[in-house]
Every structure is written in structure tokens, then in C-alpha cells.
Image (cartoon, rainbow, N blue to C red; front, side):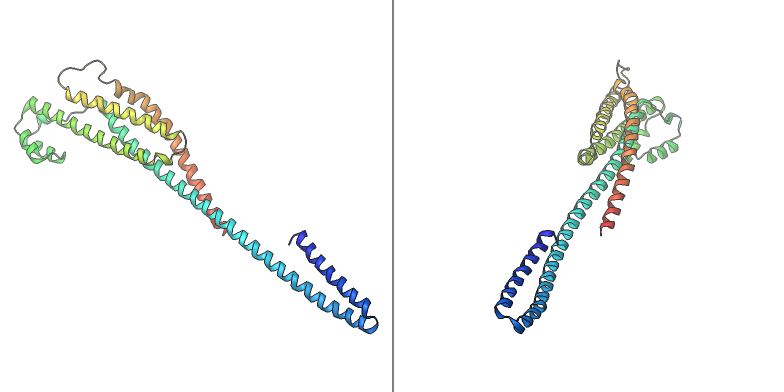
Length: 264
């Protein structure tokens, strides 16, 4: 109850007192005494009743205000917790996909051909099956021998590496397109820069496979070298940023949960 409300009650009490005093003066004698004590009794009851009513109303308003504030705080905490969770998941998944796509694309710089020309037919058949080559392709490859077998297998193997690298890049790009909205400022640009480096390296890798046997042209490894140098530097920088951000998000999310529980 504030000062203005108390003042109003007191003023109402004074009005009642004034009215009763007028009655005292008009009646006189014993009647005044009886009226005086009656006044004290009924005025006291009236004041207590009015005070209780006002107090009850104030408590009801206070409870209503507290519930409103609590509801508002709960909504904001829930929203913040959902955002923290979404950012944590998006960053974790996108970093894992980037790491995989980067490693496969950067590895295209070096090739380690398996010496299939030295394998027996049985060993060669088993190796091709383990690599996942379909049956009709295996039948064709088994007809090859010596250097021709080695060259054809090398080209096929490089195409499999390219297809895998391209698949991983597409998965990474798709994830980035859908979830970068949850990233904090400055993260999306770095992820996009690495996406572009991987894409250009894969394009270059595809061209090298298509032109295999025609000689190595000048700049044939330019994009791949850039991925291995500039890309590596960016990966190190981004890894540190992601690590710090993930720990920060985890701590802030935990604080939100604890704060919400403490306000209950």
C-alpha cells in the first residue's frame, strides 16, 4: 500500500469523525457519550474493513504483476536457450562437415596408386570388390593386364576420390546454407570462404582427371595449392573461433537453464 492510498483511507476516517462530532454536539449529555463509544466501535470496524479490502486488492495486483514479469522472463529465457542450442548444434555439425570436406579435397594434391598390375586375377577381383566396383565394371577390368590395367584403374580410382570429395563439399554447403542463420557475426564469412576454396580445388581436380595423360599444364595445381596454404590457415583460425564459441554457448546455455530454475 502506498502513501496516497493510506492518505485516502485516513481522509475517509476524518469525514466519518466529523459527521459523528456534529451528532455529539447536537444531542448532548449521555446521548453524546453513547454516541461517542458507538462511534469508536463502528469507526474502528469500518477502518479495519476498508484497510483489509485495500490490502487485499494491492496483494492481488502485486501477484498479477509478479506473474506477468515471471511469464515474460520465462519466455525470454526459453527463447535464449533455444537459440543457444540451435547455434551449438549448427556450429558443431557445420565444422565437422567442413573438416571432412576440406581433408578430402586437400588430399587430391597427392595420389598413391595401388600397384594392381602386379596382382593376380584373384587378388585383383577381390580388391575391386572391396573398393565397391560394380560387377560389370569388374568384368571389364579383369580383361586388362599390365600397364593398361594400371592406367585404367588409376583413372577410375581418381574419379572415385573426386566423386567423394564433391559429395562431401555438397553436404557441407547444404548444411551451411540451412544453418548459418544461427551463427554469430563473423562466422558465416569464414565458412563461405573455405567453401569457395574447396569448390575451386575440386573443379581443378576434375580437370586434371579429364586431361590425365596429356601432360601437366601450368597452374594445374594452383587452386589446390591455395586450399592447402590459405585454406589451412583459415581452418586453424576458424577452429579456434569455433572452439571458443562452442564453450561460450554451452556455458551461457547452462546459465539460462539455472536462471530459469532459480526464478521458479
